[in-house]
Image (cartoon, rainbow, N blue to C red; front, top):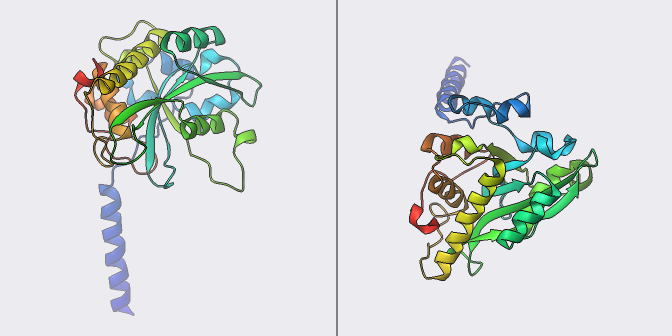
Length: 258
């Protein structure tokens, strides 16, 4: 018995040490979205703001509008994360203006308070639909849009009898970029310009081979924000989500976005 207890104690000690060594994704939530909007650069981690906590009960688009480094469950596995970018527009007029200017579409759904939420998504996929392809930016891919929709109105779009996508969205403030865009509208346009330029370079023959563990969806999001001047520290904080992330700290050369 004493020997068994000693072995049990040793196992618990090893587990405790292992737990201490595991990096934990930051889950610090701002109590007030307006506080997060005005957060100084020095308090970025402390002001990390989660779209999924507020979108369903927002009563005005100004409370939730912005650019979000987002993640959802992979279609093939609920353990691994697929990273993408979500744009939540400030108004229907802004949505129409931006989508028309960049030739993209949008989605709109009513949240639990009856507020119409307008949004678009940008995600990295391959040009031939297989792991052997080259990376392209895909706007409003079906699963990305569904993941956001589920959190716009979980009472309506999340079902007890099927898994949801476990969407998470970390707000990206203009001040996180260098130089900083003058407004949320300018930030959205800067992100879309880079995504469109990446695709134009791909079409011109300047291609990036997809890799599950390196040049992947998370790498694409981090690389796009890197090309806009986001620091490595901010990319590390914003790119950590519940579940398994890989590739978010790898970088594609900024030349692919110019």
